[in-house]
Image (cartoon, rainbow, N blue to C red; front, side, top):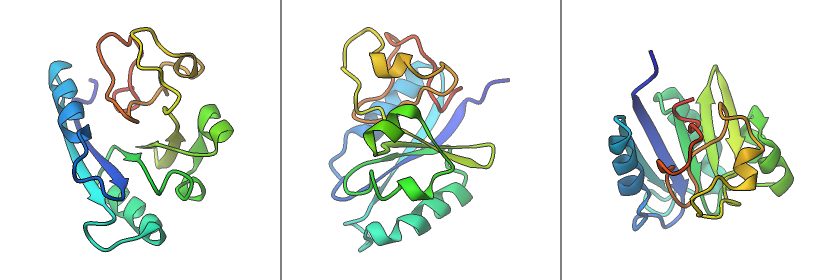
Length: 150
């Protein structure tokens, strides 16, 4: 049986006004999934990029399924990951981390075009590893499965 409940977070600085929690939670609801999206704001709790190893490890230990990563952490997260997608490696930055099978897998979905057809960078990955995240949640107009549900 496929997983239907997810715990996701966003790590970045100054992200309290982010629409990501509402957008991701609503899309999950529309897909028949339960998702809690938690903000982990470096500015809010006095953390810095130097705390990223602890924050990633804490999220993983707490049972998070994955994290979206934003400024100023997209490059600093690279050495903390087990695997990188081709796009993340080519771009040199990660905006999505998936915790699966004891590994931390990094992806970059910043090249998404926001169109109704799957962007070239998404088609380059298999449907089982294409991540959700970045600036908008997956939508039903995108036929690929997300990293959270794959």
